[in-house]
Image (cartoon, rainbow, N blue to C red; front, top):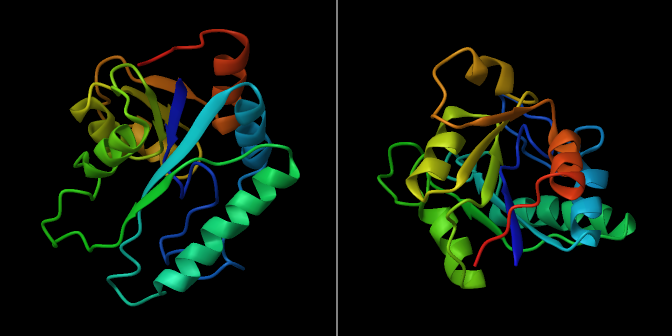
Length: 183
């Protein structure tokens, strides 16, 4: 199975320090929807692991989050692709849960769902927490320069972190060059 794990805000859609609170505010980064569809059509299972503390903060509810994810699935389907499992952490940063990145709980959920080892699986994110979560499960940390990526790159990155301009560049690399396989 060719598995790819993506963070959501800042990787697939534009991010906001004020949170993405509605479907109208959920705006794809140019090229990201097409990239997911291309990966899907090339045999990749594209999954999403996203911190969504806006739920705990009361900025939006689960129905709104589900509507955002339904919109993501709809847009990718319009391009001929599909999105695999989407997992999210609804907790705030001080909740002490094991799912909020940089903890690896969501990635472990994806591994259990697909019955795969995550060693070497690419996890694409734009924050230090994304990269740390990848390292915690022996996945390949991949940083994109969209979202918080520029700021993240200015700090120390985990050893071996790959860096790309955006999700479209990640897709081009995986489809045309180095297709890592797992489990």
